[in-house]
Amino acid sequence: MKTEEAKEIIENQLDALGKALETGHSDQLKEFLATMARFHKYSLGNVLLIMAQKPEASHVAGFHTWKSLGRYVKAGEKGIAILAPMLIKGDKFDASDTSPPDQEEDPERMLRFRVVYVFDVAQTEGEPLPEFAAVTGDPSEYGERLRSLVRQMDIELQYSDQLGTALGVSKGGTIVIKNDLEPAQEFATLVHELAHEILHHGEGRKGTTIQSRELEAEAVAFVVAQAVGLDAGTASSDYIQLYQGDKKLLLDSLDAVRKAAATIMDGLL
Image (tube, rainbow, N blue to C red; front, side, top):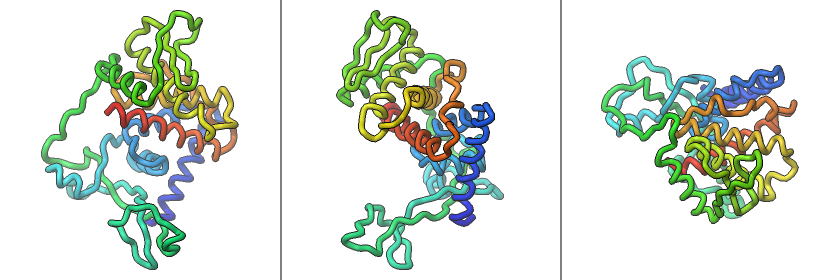
């Protein structure tokens, strides 16, 4: 697959997401958010590529990475194309140089992308992978890890009975959570409010609506809950209104969700 073909797949996936939302169907977007939960270290474009080629994928890596883990790609398996950043000097790629290009010092050093291939664990065989901690319906130790992450980010965490019907509130430097919530509900609420702290109290997200901010925070909570094994499907909002007829706004919103979810998950997993 060529780079331009990969980029066309990404565009087609975004178009499909937009059309699905425009017609009142959010299942495809929820599927995308679930895929994002499994691949939070990947760019938005690469999540779309994985979803388009192998939506059931759960853990992907390159041929040599699998080999280093004692696993081998099965004969006849087709790789999943993703885009990898490469620095180009003149007419040659320099895969080993991952420092950001400095156009003032060397205007010929430019960032480009090329297609590389990864394989899902189901396409390999060999040594079993280490078992990762997973939970169903109970965040277990992830609840304490999340509270610790909030403290590390210099955000004060408070509990209160004076929130009315709200389960939590983000005040920019302070998060208040309703007392006596069930562990799973407290976890999802705290992630939601932490998403607000990350996304919506700085300068970068000015111009967003209250509705879009709530939907973005809820989407982050959905992604993180999925990543730690909680069933967020019944408690999550309908994300249809993240799309307002503008594909660029949808792209910006999804990328904001991805970055916030990745920040939180990097502190939990």
